[in-house]
Image (cartoon, rainbow, N blue to C red; front, side, top):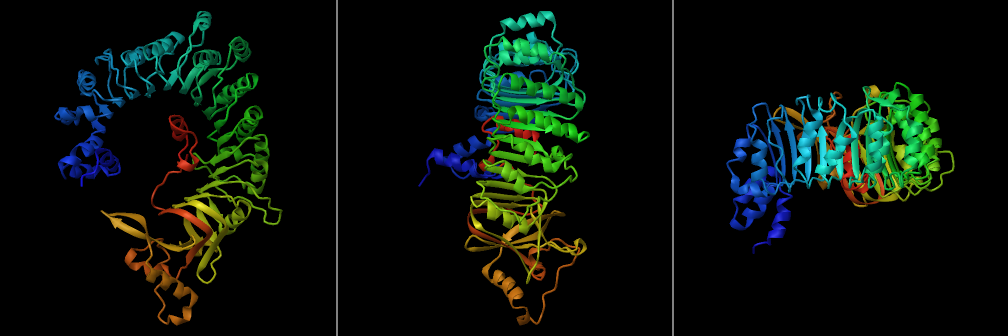
Length: 597
């Protein structure tokens, strides 16, 4: 029986890339669907580009192309791609040379998404280069442009951006680094005749400019729903025009009526002035921001300024914010005051405290106070290095938290137990790269969370240690989860091609019985197992018995529908579909700014 083409195509999408070629040779029925997946996305450089030219019969299958052209690239390369790759919809183009000799003026109606990187382009006409880039792309919907040199030599004017939108009228996503002109009197007159565009996502890194550019953005981008604004130490932004900007915006019929997602990143005091001005604009025109990522002072040079800026931000946007992402550096000055600041966020349902730069510990956050001040909170991501204080002697009102991610901190089994007592509606639990400690009784370190029934449990890169003198701590590599049927895991060492890595396997029933028998009936084993060397964290699968005397961790849940567990040596992302920040294209904006989201 031959499966239908559609089903084979879905199967092919699940097959690893290295195995697709073999699948194509199985039979004639398999050839077309597996070839379609194999050729859908191609990555080449200047040297490998000639190999791509040898298979013209497959060019119509290519939908995404990642290409890096070196100094020896021929001027006709882009023309060849345009003429031969008729189905191409996405291209990532990296050019390490001056592109003035490339023909970029031909109309290209299939391309929808272009990512353009130029580390070493000619800086004589950066504006002209960007305009030439989009001149022949009338159907372009997403443009990302970055360069260490580009756009930093000459400032952009309003007419420059107007040309870009005129050549790409369907543009919905623009990500670019801009050095903007200080607006002249003539430029301000142009603002009166600006027509609205279809742009929905604006991701800009501003090197210079003034606040009156927001008048242009507000008039031009009336459909904007996501804004990512980045400033750096080298940014020079004139904030002296705030009053004039507010006056000019008052004459507009609407000011960012659809703006819901805002990501603001800046790490110096000059950027704080621009940030505070932005919040004042939001307050004056009642812009209902619902999702906010506010990275303040990532260098934590002035933590007090970071806290004051956050307070001013939440005083303006707090009542409407539903999702808030902030770095742990904000907590440096007064961590105990942070939950009180959050009390202004009366609609907050998703909070993420992240450590973007592996900063040192500052102080503990009272998890009780955090939950008390955020009664509607449904999702919580905590990546604050210190332990969270949890007052076990106070009254514990039930909280409706459903999704919890604890990452990159040291915590205890007692804390997890108290979380389960207060957050009994918890359905999703992710423990990532944390150190979990607790008392070891009869070889068992028990984590009692029997009050909750989980839909998903993820334990990725967690390390378990007995709560004792750090010099005597040894990693516990045996794990036992009741869900309610018992599942045993063992983390062991794998050496391949001279490199060591961790792996996880399920213990067989006989092996699990041996572990329990050793710790429950120690006197029935006159021949003690040889203990693991104290300098080793892992042993090979063959020597797994050496992990038995150290003990095991027992997680006790009411029930668990699905479990995912990986080794501490395996990297993993915190971008979970159950707690994703936003959907579709706007997720890229936030994900690019925070490694765990």
